[in-house]
Structures are given as C-alpha cells and as structure tokens.
Length: 241
Image 1 (cartoon, rainbow, N blue to C red):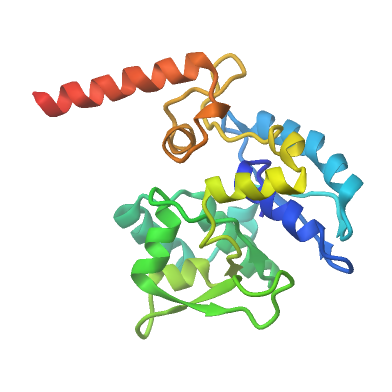
Image 2: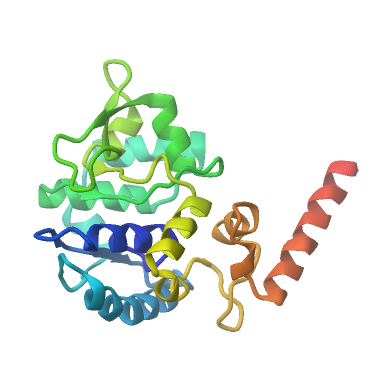
C-alpha cells in the first residue's frame, strides 16, 4: 500500500533493493481528499527514480477508487469492525478500504504503519492483537501479521490481511537509514499533508502534526510552522479556560 508518503516510500525503497522480488504498489484514490493530486504527483516523480536504483522489479501502481471498492467488495463484518475501531481509536477510513480490497481480491498486502506514539493503527493493533512473524520475510526479521489476542477482535478483522514491516521503526530511524543509503533526494519528494494550503503543507492536519512532533519539522515551510504554533496557542488557551 503506497501513498507517496514518507513511510510507505521508505519501505518501497527498502524492498526495491532485494534482487528477485516483484513489488506491486497499490494506491486508493479518494477524489474528495484535497491531498490526492499531490500524492499522485509525488508517486509519478518518485517511481522512475526508485526503478533507477532498484534490484527488484517495481511494477506500475495499481489504482483503485474508494467508491468502487465499497461498491464491488462490500463486507459487513469488516465495515462493522472498522466502525467500532474508528469510534474507539479514531482509526482512519483508509484501513477499511485496505481490508475490503484485500479481502475482495483475496490477497495480502504490506502496510507501512510506523513506530509512532501518535499512530492510531498501532494503538489498535497493540490493544487487540498479537504480532506473529511472517513465514517469509524478504528483509529478514521484522515483518509481522496479526492474530487476535482472544477468540476474536475487531483489529484482527480489519488488519488480518495486512503485513507490517515497520512497526518497530520510527521516522527518525528511517531518515538515518535513508541518509546512509543515499535515498534522501527521493525521500524529499514524498508528500504527507492531508489539507495543503497553496500547494504547501498546512501544519495542522494530523500528518503535519506528526511531522512537527517526530523529528521531521525540517520538512515544514515557515507558513506551516506558524499555523502549528497558532494551533498550539489555541489549545493552551482552551485548556486554561
């Protein structure tokens, strides 16, 4: 599952260095999402550069529309489980789409959920699932799938067809590796903001807040940093009242 963002691009680069591997990137289009054009543009810029250094075979991106997935692959069990996770953890709708698509196609896919205290997906997994090492991990140890802690769990239903290769890796660590491997020119082309303002990161959407709090402040333009400071000031003011 590739978005043109920092974490999934890092994982794409990491997997691309494995000779004999075939990588099939998948992107889910949401035409109501302000960042979609920026994400697609980032992927168009990044993919040729990844292929230029890849030892793996990197295929073209498979594009699926959010509405088409919901229409073609309905699954009440997944959607109801996702709804409860969204209520409890604030889980983003993309995970419902990932689950419906993978179940509908009968495939497993890797999802770049990173080691972050702000990751809602990781919190849901830790609360309701056990991690089991994948039988075949092209990168060695560190790739996991989930099973329920008890007889069943909503998180196991939603995340059951996903593999996770970055649950123990932070953004700071990925930057260190990217610098060592010479990947930073590619990584700088990634996109992360959900609500861009004049084509630049907004500073106050959740991915921008993650960037500000997880060692990625350098990616933010001055306008985004100022909006973030204003948001913090409003938060402090509301707490003081």
